Picture 1 (cartoon, rainbow, N blue to C red):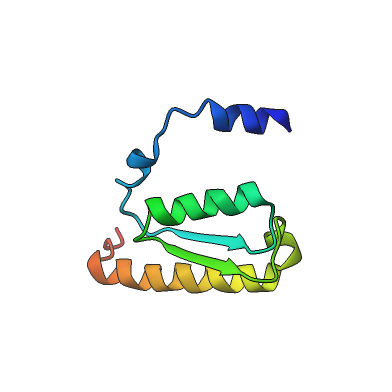
Picture 2: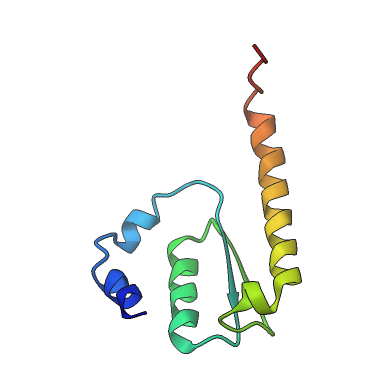
Length: 96
């Protein structure tokens, strides 16, 4: 588990680099998670204001497991919305 923290502290990517990303992104966080994770979610909201951010009030740190229905519903809606918008922008390749 300590390797996760080592990876975070030694990551050379800066928030300004993240702000250059323009692809569709969605961040789901839990209001009942630990303070450090809430802070990371807050920094992502500030750094990536064009991304979709949602805080689930009853969810903690293990939301994808404890709130699987709510998380999956939001993921499906996000993917569906962006699949529709990208298919309108990009013509489908013709079958060979």
